[in-house]
Length: 367
Ligand code: SAM
Ligand code: DTB
Ligand code: SF4
Image (cartoon, rainbow, N blue to C red; front, side, top):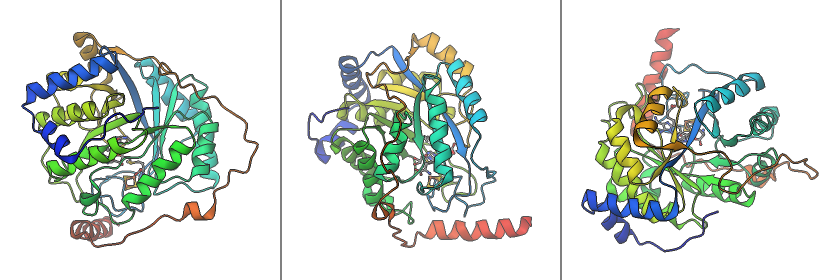
C-alpha cells in the first residue's frame, strides 16, 4: 500500500500540468526512476465476463443498454472460457487478468458466487486477479479477497463537478465508498479516469487531486483516453492529442510517486513514439490483448516488438510483495442491507436523454 507523502493543492497540480512539456517529462521521469524500475512494465489483460445490457447511463460507455451501440449482450462466461483467456494472456506476458462486468453494482446472488469461482480459477494459475464489477459492499470485497483477488478497479472517471454531466444514475460519493470498502478488505485499489470527454484541464487536475488525496493513495491509476463509440452521447468527440496524454501521465506520476500509472484505453490512436514518451513520463503498465472490454486494442505482437525496441520487460506477478491466498470463509459474509443501498441522483443530462431516445428508436426500427 502507498502512504501519502505530500498534500497537493489544486494550484500546484495546475502548475505542474502547465509546465513546459519536456521539463514536465524530465521531472516525471526523475520521480519514476526514484520509485520504480523504469524498464519494467506490468501487463494486464482485460476480459469482459459479462457484456452489455447495463442499466447505467454513463455517457462514454458502449455497454449501457439505453444507447444503441451494437454491442452484443453476453451472460457470465464459464470457468473454462475464463481459464483459457487467462492462459492466453499469460502467453503474451500478462501478469494480471482484469475481469469486467457490465453491472451497476454487485448483488449477493448466484452470479456473484460464480465470479468468486472465476477469481479462484485465475488465482490458481499464479496470476494477479483484478475485478471491475461496479459498486461493491465491504463484505463482497472480503469475499473476493478470500478468493485470492489482488486488485479491484473502480474509476472516479473525472472530477466530482464534471461527473454530474456524464452520469446521473450513480453518485461520486458511491464511488468513493466502494473504494473505501475495497481498502477495508485489504485489497489493492485501482482507480483512475478518462480524458477527452470534454472536461477542462481543471477537471483533470481535480480528479488527480482527489485520487492523490486518498489515504493511502491508489496502488494503480489507469489513465484512459476516451474511445468515442458510435451510439453513445460522446460519439462525436475528437480523440485527445498525444501531448495531453503525456501531460496527464506525467502529472499522475509526480503526484502519486509510488502508484503504478496504467496507459489504458486509447492506445490504438497513439503511435509507438507517443507511447514511448508516456513510458518515459512514468507509465508503468498497459492493457495488452487485442480487445479492451468491447473495443479494439493494439495487436499483442506489435506491443511485444515495441517492448523489445524500447528495452522494456514485462513485470512478473506478485513482485510488489502482496501475495493473496485463497482462504476458506468461516464467517457470514452476506452484505449488511444498508451497505447495498446505493444512490441514484437522477438529474437530467440532456445528451444522455437524447441518446436514450435515439437508442429506443434505433432498436424499434431493427425489430
Ligand atoms: N460496470 C463497472 C463500472 O462501471 O465500474 C465496470 C466496467 S466499466 C466499463 C470500467 C471503466 O471502463 C469505466 O469506469 C470507465 O472508466 C472505462 N470505460 C468505459 N467505457 C470507456 C470508453 N468508451 N473509453 C474509455 N474508457 C471507458
Ligand atoms: C480501465 O480504467 N479501463 C479499462 C478497465 N479499467 C476496466 C476499460 C476500458 C474500456 C474501454 C471501452 C471498452 O472496450 O468497452
Ligand atoms: Fe455500466 Fe460500467 Fe458501462 Fe457505466 S461504465 S454503463 S456502470 S458497464
